[in-house]
Length: 364
Image (cartoon, rainbow, N blue to C red; front, side):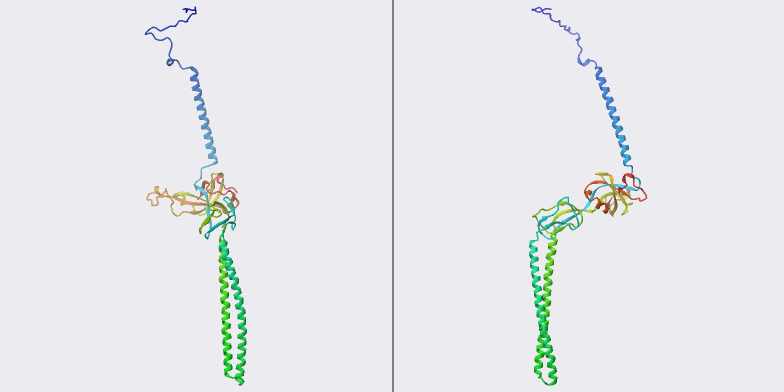
């Protein structure tokens, strides 16, 4: 057909009423072949990936089993954390912190000064007691000089009395003079005894002043805080200028000579463990470096409830705390590597006839 301008229009074929459409709908179109191929390819890839993962997991498991062989009968293990004894460095007397000579993380030696308290008031009392000591010493010197004088007077009175007795026998003196000489001698003896007593009093006063001096010196020394053992400063609990009561904590340090791990074993295994049994500590941070240790403590009572049990199944649930302590000489050699709180596993050999697996053999 042509329109008014002479152009030919394409004829539109319309379906008759009641007859089906000649154009198929999208719901009845066949699935393209390339879609089926894509699904098959994805399935093959998934299967291949699964096979690779299973192979890798299996090989990894065998590698792990080779590195961690099963424990032989006679060795038990338990989980725990490395711990070291904590020592609080605290004040003996109330006072103000005047100086801090250590900080967190510092390694200190036995007797090392880590802090000083303000001791100006004690130093003034010390100066007073020292002055009293000097005064007591001068009193002693004076009393001894007086004693020497009285000793001379006593000696003179004794000599005069002796001459008077000889004269009285010969009749050259009277009894009255003899009585006077005797009174003079008695007075000289009394004065001598009094002078001797004053020397003793002055000596006691000196001793008291010296004791006060020593007491104040001890107080000053106690206000100088020192590390009681070799270790590492874990916490600093006070600052310069703070006023602390008696027993106030300034530092908390770790005793590097006593490092251990506490683990819990069931009744059947804990009953076979003995003190000084050989052990190995393997930390998560150093899985390839087993640390030799010894069992130093076994709890005499179960740590977990129930406390009173009636059946064997319940008794098997009881757990006993066991402590494995690391050798002190090894700790001294590796003091820088000691860390408190690191998790790990402790292996305890309760049967001495059993050999350690290769992965638990201690390094020299």
